[in-house]
Length: 341
Image 1 (cartoon, helix red, strand yellow):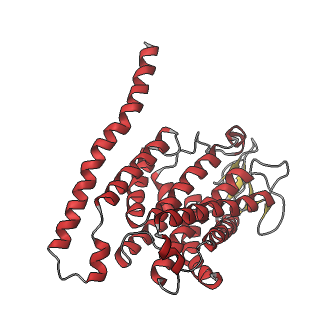
Image 2: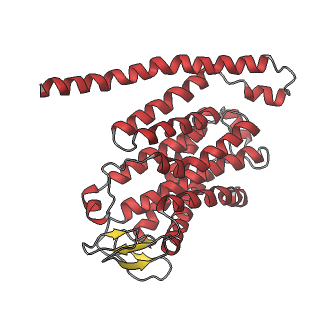
Image 3: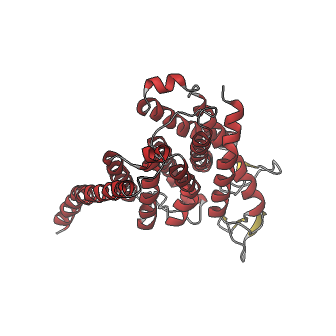
């Protein structure tokens, strides 16, 4: 019976993508038909908008299929639960509809942060009171990490339309501003995730509190290490690299040659990852409670037998992540505009 059960599970894993594809194709075609009908009954729409509002059936198909498979992969790997996978599919749909470069930011964040979460998980079990195998992100965590980027993507869809465009603040200021903001939100979250998931289990020394430089137990909110700060920049650089490569492969070469250089987006991603991690640590050290219980495990709520380390019980980890991503998404485009050659 046990063998039959395992075989049935394998068959279900094989059949699930097929069933999802069978549903995704008619859904994407229905969305494309609705889009064409809308453009037909609104002929007075300006040519500037009509060009971008009519979405090709291939993009509709990609916007439905790709997020489904990413969400299914994340659920199967226990990186997200059902609620997180469903919300992630919606976010992926919006981001894919606007630009494949925006989807690349989501993909790089989700995959690399999931790998970072599983890195040396056996050691994290001893440090985290609410440790979950594989991460198991809920819809709240997905919303706090990707909500700001999705909101900017909706603005991009309404203002700029859909399609890949190179970053050029002189020729396409609004589109470039929104794209860098989307990248900044994901770079912030990825940098912070890399710092907290890798920095806490690499090295032998305890981290130091970012506001006082005093040594604190591993897992303390606001505790940073030099390794953590380095990997936070690398996490942001990874998001920027994915964006850069996607632009190179999806935008016509002649268009890229006429636009500003695109390589600075990698550096901008690194800045977003580092800045986001530092901001998250400052908020965590001041507005998020950290204490240690009798077992030596760091907790986020005061109680009997818990010794206070730092911070006040004003924000939780989800609120800190959301606030950090909002700040970075709104400030990074300005920084990019100043340093862009």
